[in-house]
Image 1 (cartoon, rainbow, N blue to C red):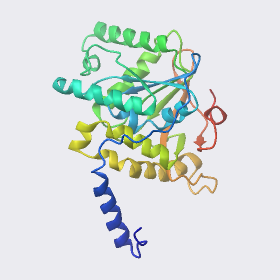
Image 2: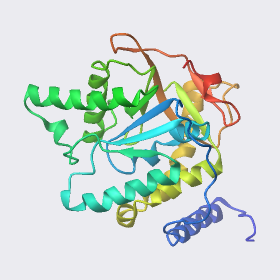
Image 3: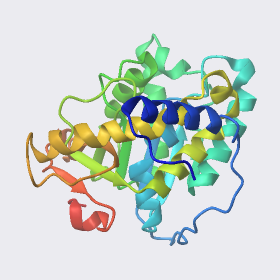
Image 4: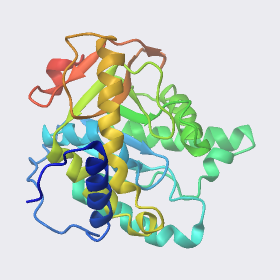
Length: 285
C-alpha cells in the first residue's frame, strides 16, 4: 500500500494516477450485490431516460428503491440521434439496466426522438396518448425525468413532454421526481446518500455503455459528481450552514413534487434520505 500523501500536490497526483489506472478496468464482470425479488404488487418507479446512460447517471434513487423491493422500469425515450448506432446503444442500455436490476422498455417506434420534434399538434397528441398509455399500464407510483433547465435540448424536451403526459393519465403517479446532470437545480428538495458500494455499482452500470465511455470515460467522473452533489445538496436541502445537514460523502440531488388530481405539481417537504433509513419513512408516498 502506498504511503499517504504529505502535500496537496502529492494528493492530486495520486488522484490522477488512480483515475488513469481505472481506464483499464473496462467492463466489470465481478459478482454483483444481490437484490431482493420484485413482488407482483410491488410499487413501481419509472425512469424517463433521454439517452442510454441516464438510467445510471441519475439512477441512485431508483437503485435505492430497487434494493427495497420496488420495481424499476427504465423507459428509453431515445437511443440517440444516430440511427446507425441504435443497435449498439440498445445492447449497452440493456446490459446497464440488468446490472442495476432495472427493466427496460421502449415506448416509441422512432427511437431517434422524433416524438419530441413533432411539428403538428395531432402528431404530438398521438405521441402523448401512446406514452400515457404506457405509464397507465405500468401504474407508476413515482415518475422520474430531467428538470426543465437541464441544459441539453433533449433532456429539456423530455422533461416538458413527460410533464405534459402526466396530465393525460387515467391513473396519476403519487410523486414526480426531477433529476439533474447537464445543469444543476437551484432548489432541490431531496438529497439521497450513496454508499461507496452503491456508487461503484452505478459506475459499473455506466461502464456498460462501452462505445460512449470509450469516446469519453465520463463514468470515471461520476464519483466526483456525486461527491459534489453531496456538498451542494446537504446545504441546499438541509439549510446553509445547518449543523443538522447529514455528512454525506456521496449523494444525488432531486426535486420531488406531489401530483394533484389535475396532474399539476405540488410542493413537498425537504428530504434528507440517509443510507440506513427506508424511503417510506422519509417521504410521503
